[in-house]
Length: 81
Image 1 (cartoon, rainbow, N blue to C red):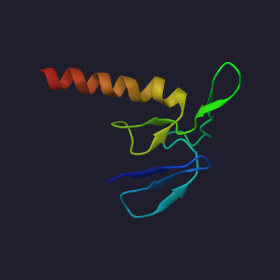
Image 2 (image 1 turned 60 degrees about the vertical axis):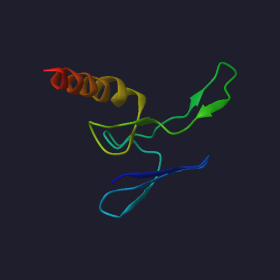
Image 3 (image 1 turned 45 degrees about the horizontal axis):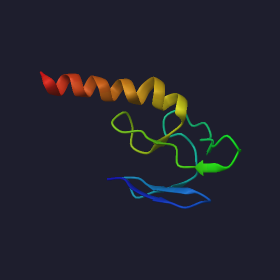
Image 4 (image 1 turned 135 degrees about the horizontal axis):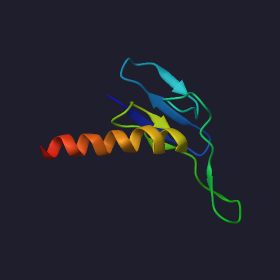
């Protein structure tokens, strides 16, 4: 079970094994998850993306686009059959 608590300074991910991962690293590739900024450079989101169903945790933009979204689409196609 995943329990996510978000603050402005960090994302605390309590994993299903009870351990704490106190970072903003992508659960899939391990890279740092950069904040999203508006046109003025003001940070409006620091939490990454939900990596479900590909992985349990938060992921970077690249893994979200290349791995998580295709995984969700595949899951949706399989559920329709």
